[in-house]
Structures are given as structure tokens and as C-alpha cells.
Length: 349
Image 1 (spheres, rainbow, N blue to C red):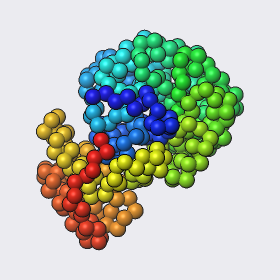
Image 2 (image 1 turned 135 degrees about the vertical axis):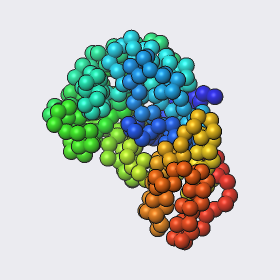
Image 3 (image 1 turned 90 degrees about the horizontal axis):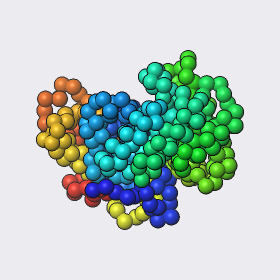
């Protein structure tokens, strides 16, 4: 059943107060199911799905997600207004809570497709793309972008981009606080080398107080999150949420003021994921190891975590049932002095 959380305030908070960034190869539906076990309110984003993949490929497969993932947003990659409108409608019919346009990815793949970060140089086209989608759906249409492209470092550039795109009906901007270098840097280098300039994102909120502005890029701690929430409406966390997912377990209480759900244990979350692996294998043949790869950060920083990860990522164990692999992994949890907790997960779903 479709959730309305993304269209309504959670208490007095913006639906974009906290989110997990769209990450290619990582934030698939299995990853999002895992993240939802840790936080009920945080907005989750899909990997980028291109308009071509939806229009000419298996749309049902690309749009499939678990009902428990709500609130969940579909990120689209494309630059043709008509195609984006078609795909936005498909996303709304499928039950997504938001449609997001990718104007921030600097990879060669998106450059060849003439979308992603290079669209920041065509603000009028992005405005038209947004308007085409806004005209055909009644869920939020948002844009994720950078603060600039290549060596264009003037604040005026991103200010004018936001101002122009807002004319198309976009009210929510998710801003990665780095430039995207379209030539000379790999996607990985684009996440690390261009300097973070959070002050530009904070300035956007001051200049556009009527818009929702969320900041993304290099945010790794609760202290970082709290600091930025003092300046903008929301914080999007990317790789830290993936590699250290336990960071999210306190978000509902700490940042949404929701203390209605008991804090789960790592053991209970892991058991819930084993249950999910078995269900996914029966329902659509998903192999357990494709799911387990997303939870390898669950014991980040704990004794025994390395050996625990080795079990779950051992390709020699792929023929075994997930529950048998889980029992083998638990040996290293017990040897590290962390006794498994047999009680079931108190669901946050």
C-alpha cells in the first residue's frame, strides 16, 4: 500500500529532513529493505533508472520495490521532457512517493546520454523537464544536482540554476556540495577531489527561503547532520549510510523525535534479513549473497566484524542456504563476546 509520508510533514519536520542518497550499484531494493529495518522515517532513493531503460526495457523489473520501503523516491536519468513525463507517470502508478531528476552524476555513462551533471549547463532544459513531469503527476518532483560544473565556482551559477529550475515547479533541491568535473576525473574522484563548499548550499536556503534545500556530500556523523540542519531543511547521507548503516538506527529518535519503536539489536536486524533472503529466493529467485552484500557494514567497528563479513561474502558458500551461512557467521559473533539475541525484531516497517 502506498505511503503518504513523503507528501506530509512528519510531526513538524520536512519529509526531506534525512535521506539516503541514490547510489549506482548499491541502493537497490534489497539495500533499501535493509535500511528500512534501521529507520522508519528516513527517505530512501533508488539507484538512477534511465528513461531509455523504462521505455524500451523491462519497466516492471526496473520499478519493482518492496512495500516496506516507503517513503521511497524514484530517481530518473534523462533529458527529454516527454520521455521523463512518461517515466514519471510510470513511477507514480507503481507507487513511488517522489520523482527525482538526476542532474549531479558526472560519470561517462550519463555524459554520453547527455544527462546527469552536464544538465546543470542547460538550466532552461531542466526547467522544461521538471514542468513536463509536474504536469502529469501529483507527487513531488525534485532535482539532485551539484554546486557547479568543471571549474565554474561562482555561487551565481548554482543560484541561477536553482532559480530557473524552480520556475518549472520544482520545490525541492538536493545539493551535493561539490562541483562535478565533467572531464579529467573519474566518478570516484568526483566524490573526493572537488572541495566541499557547504556554505554555498546554506546560502541557497537564505536566498530561496520558500524552497526546500537539502545538503549532500561528505557528511558522516550525527554532529555533522545536526550542524547542517541548523542551516538547511534536510541532509542526504551517501556512502557513510552504506558502509556504516548502524549510524541510522538512532535517526528516528534523534532527528524526528520518534521514540515509539524500540531500538533493534544488530542480531535482530540480521535475523530479519535472513528471513527476507529466504522470502526473496522463493518469490523471485534472488540469491542470498546479492542481498547479504548490502549488510556487510552492519557490524562496522565491532570485534569479530572482519571474520563475520568474510563468511557472508565467501563465494564458496553460495550453494548453501542463507540460514546455514548465518549460523556460520554467528560463530564469529559469539567468539567476539557478543551473544546473539534470539528475540524477534520489533518491526519498524
